[in-house]
Image (cartoon, rainbow, N blue to C red; front, top):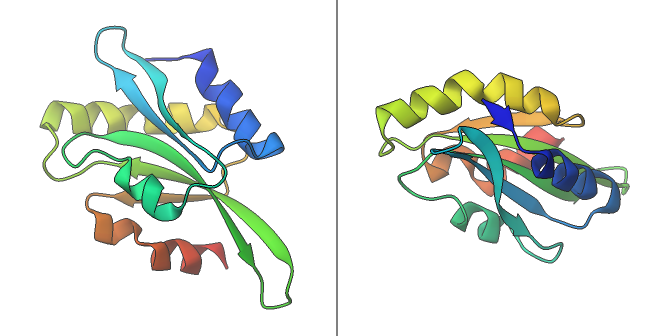
Length: 132
């Protein structure tokens, strides 16, 4: 599996320039490479992000979560999400599972990871609790 250069470039923009709130990646079936599927602008919400993940197809995604600590400090945490819904094809689930670590290593700066098979496993409350 090959990672398209745009995947890393867009991640670096999310991390350093804060140009995006989230990025959704998919594995192109024909070329067997990870490509950017969707970019979420800085004003988009977690709900927009969750709605960007297809209900019956696997995806990788990163989400930049901004929050304020108990000490009243502005912080940010970048989450890597491995989305593998129950309704996805078994072959697709296996491909995404076997490629995940290699892809994640390309994205230097991931601070937390979530694996989800349905929306309840990646609710906003889970993101908030993992950020602290």
